[in-house]
Amino acid sequence: MSGAKWLLDTNVVIGLLKRQSAAIALLEAQQLNLGQVAVSQITRMELLGFPGLAQEEEAAILAFLGNCQILFVDEAVEQQVIRLRRASYCKLPDAIIAATAQAHQLTLLTLDQRLEKLATQL
Image (spheres, rainbow, N blue to C red):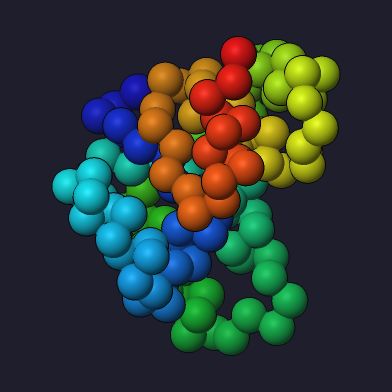
């Protein structure tokens, strides 16, 4: 892992791009440096796969993602997803994001309290 400490959930990235105070406050509380963040490939797919995404929105997302490390679903993440899904009911994308944070020993930053709790399980 090349210096990443945090994994950003999709809702945090959207909040930052839209300059929402809750997302900004979350990152300021962590004294976050964009050089130390990663996102799951699921987050990248959710952001770029949004229906009706305008060209300027896509450019902003790509610029933001260019500052982040992208973490892919590998065997370790897959095994953690399976454990999470067996232990609690959750949506597959949420399980993948939480498992990515766990497998890479990163702190998940999310505005979703349920997902935050899931990320600390197991």
